[in-house]
Length: 460
Image 1 (cartoon, helix red, strand yellow):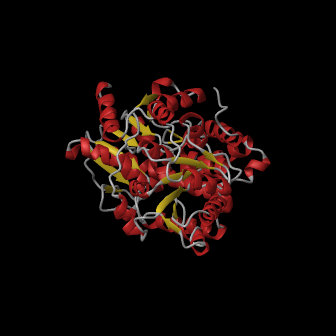
Image 2 (cartoon, rainbow, N blue to C red):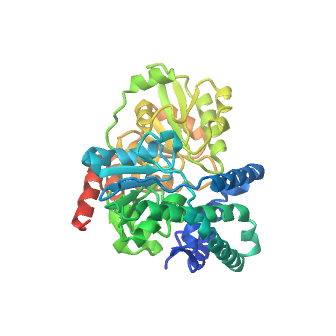
Image 3 (tube, rainbow, N blue to C red):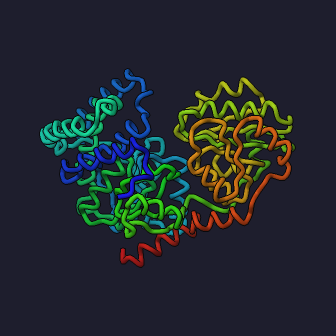
């Protein structure tokens, strides 16, 4: 298997996942049960920065809830429906879901999710503990002992220090409860197929594993950038809808079977801008005559250094430019808010405006490593890659190499670019159009229609 697309840590995590999958709970491999947590701890090192006291509190609260929630899953009619299963509901999720709601008959599509904020939309599925789960606990305890032994035999001391064993144990028991919950939910109530935009989210992965054992086909779309591929492999669903031939080739080079990989495009993307530029400016308190440079962030180690360089460029640029920082849904506004104190021409938004509104209000968009850039290219807006930091810009470099997008390496370079090209940004239309065709075969409703045509032709 060609694993050179993965970082070194990801390869170690993958080796551990495979070994753990020799153990199982109700037929579900323990490596798959812990896949997301291990990815965060080993590949991303996310939990290294987590507050230990908050983790302990979260574990305690979860334990208390597990003791008092003895309820069976409520009856939901899923029979023969296409279900969209997601751990969360946010702007990106709705972008994937809306095209299917628009092209499918009303009662044939159902959203199942675990976000209490949107409990009025679709079916809200909180974690529930049943009597069957309690009976399983003895077996889970025994398997957990084996899981710990495997972890200690596969990982060296340095990698073991990256793991939070208490948190892993908590999530292992939580995943075990979900297996029982979803077996009860889907028993004699089988959907037509399951769709999701990310099959390695903990709850989603368990729903997929349960349905696979019930012979219900499961499909995942690709959530975001596959540079690197760490967070996406191995694919847990039966099939993966790739955006285009280029993305499919990347998964093939990793070693995923070509029969699992189907080009279906990306329903979240669209080549249309639906929002009115001046209406968005009014919403944000920006004068109609002012130009807007957008920085779309993502959750990287040097995110604040990136944002500070952006602010520095706005400070040095012509006063007609406003800097708008659109932060990623999983980032916190309070991390960035100090930047507005440095410069009154900086505005920071998160959920206040949509991605479509963000692109509509922009004169130029800047990214580091974000698939937001693809949406910008599709909507025919100027894009640049901003890399004043040491971290690789991933898909951003792909935009530079294959779509002819300018690469800006410092705040001074950004100022120079704005002064020279701000009124007529550089766009290589030929390279851009060729890149889009190879990397996203279908978008929006066209993607949803194509996907439905594919599953129908598969006899599903």
